[in-house]
Image 1 (tube, one colour):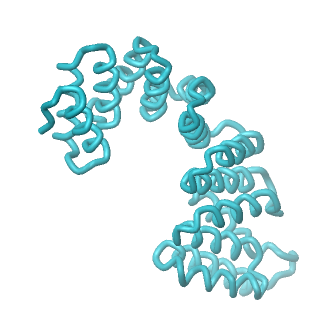
Image 2 (spheres, one colour; image 1 turned 180 degrees about the vertical axis):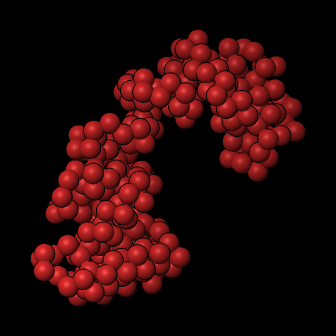
Length: 252
């Protein structure tokens, strides 16, 4: 999604009056590309470059680079606020750039831990830009994080209706069904996810969780051990070890 915003703002950052000289347009595009590269490699420096560029008329390209630099500096709330303001006020033509900026603001809100504002920004992105798998999955995650599993399932249904083998959506929906204590539907979804990606550690972890709640502790332990074997240093493996200790008293 960031790539789409970069492409749109990069090509439009110098869209001022139609008579802008070509060399000025080229310079603005290079400034934006350079600033965005710096925002990834040295966000502290990029913030200064973006601020100086904006004072000199850098327009939306400078503000977007500054917000991305803030995000990469760990200033998540400020980045989210600036991205959302840019999304609300952008003068770029068409709906795509506006929707993508709202979606990026939502991602920043999620990192900042403000799931309510993330959901509002995601909803705006969907209202403006229409169906978007990535935004729907992100909104489902945010809704699930607030314990609103039914609306999370609604979003995931929309994704899976379009992409029946979308592994992440199937895993998330399985988790939501598990949280709602519908273990049969949870197991059905996780089985579908593993049919697409048999060695997926997140799916194996979740299937273990479902098996444990069903009282099938041997199967659960087998899945959790597979997670540890496949990716011993992952977050999923850490969770699997904890589950083994809690449920079987025999963590490796």
